[in-house]
Length: 278
Image (cartoon, rainbow, N blue to C red):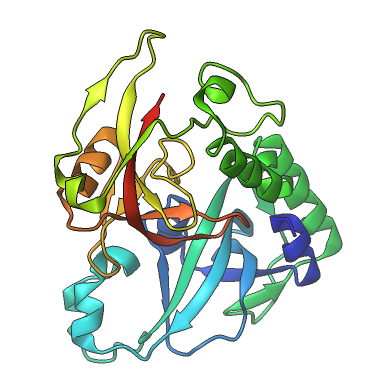
């Protein structure tokens, strides 16, 4: 089921203060902190409080809490709050509504705010239509309507022989992928810094591969201009792919975030390192 198909079953928006809504839309804030738990799971629109604008779409993956003060301080990079705010008298936002798959609209979508609404607001059919058009206009159609087929095709490509992939376009028009050229065990991962250029001029890099066959790929692992690597609770973010790959090579076991075959983002651990050509 595509993003918009999932959203159409229960089209709603979450009202969020502008400063936090912008951070979420930019991919900088992945936890929306609230005073209570939430049952909703799935996609929703982000409504910028007081503006009558929907600025992005996001997936509410899970809800956890109530958290301790120390736990929230340790995860400031996820909720973007400050230590001073967390320890201040009257602080009440102990539950993390954890988000992923954020898609920022190129053009905000207008909607009619409901009087008295402070959290969720149901969206009308005409607003949903505007969101559908906005997602198409912003050229996010691969993620929106062909997410599963795109990633399934990429997974298949990575298992083909090098002569079938390197330097050629796939018939499915899937994201560019390359075939494994050589594998090594995890014990050699720390020294996997080889970069070479075969006769065809492509660059060969050693990258980690997870049990499900996905690799730390330059394109598919980039989300909102950022690569997220490292153990949960101690993740690092990089804008540069090579820097992120270098950090992974320094880890005992590489851990990174990537989209699965359904387009949902999550962390995976390396089971081996392989050489791929770009």
